[in-house]
Length: 268
Image (cartoon, rainbow, N blue to C red; front, side):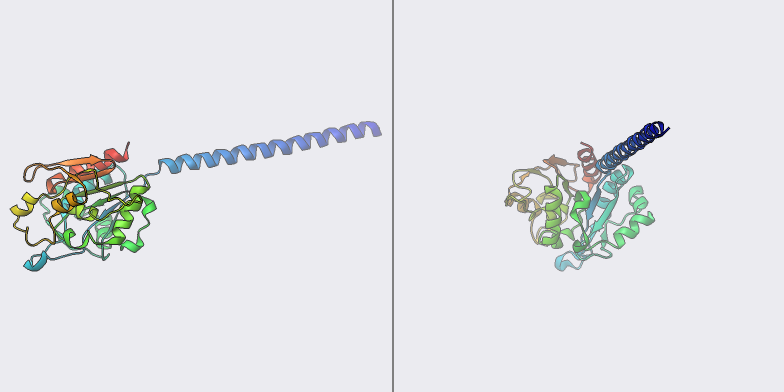
């Protein structure tokens, strides 16, 4: 009787011990699976895109109004928003930036302007100090003549763009937006645009709108000074170039194509 009891007791203890081992094993496997699933999810989560818009509202001493050019925001926004990317806005001063090229006959402009979420976002644009570059897979500098006065010398914005690029992200701009690229430096001490094919509002286009002697510098010339291999087409022609994760477009007519080029690069 006693011997049977001991055997049964040992058998019960053995089963109990093995059940505990199995429970620990299952828990470990579940935890590993959970971590892997979270890792896979985080890998496939889309990073946001940061749009930079100007806070400057006058064309030099002319007294004429300016700001960000609406079509240069709305057309890339449409491409990237419909592809499922979330977009944030930053401007040198934050808050509500001035707008130029306000044409609601353009259906894409109208769609953007009447989108409650994004109209609220751009009207409450972030200040550079509020931006965490690690959250973004791309930064896009929208044009509008105002950019010529407050993009190039903004060291905070340049630092954000440099960080995004060094993290493997994309830096883009259209028309006068690449004014924001002229002073971006990388960790190796070189200018971002140095040795790269770059495109922006041309000297001929600036002359055509009679602002050659109004803007603080000629964008084409400044980019060349920084070592850019400047490319261009004729007046108001759609021209976009991509080189080593830097995407630039020549004028308002290039805005949608810049958005498409950003999307293509993000999907690679």
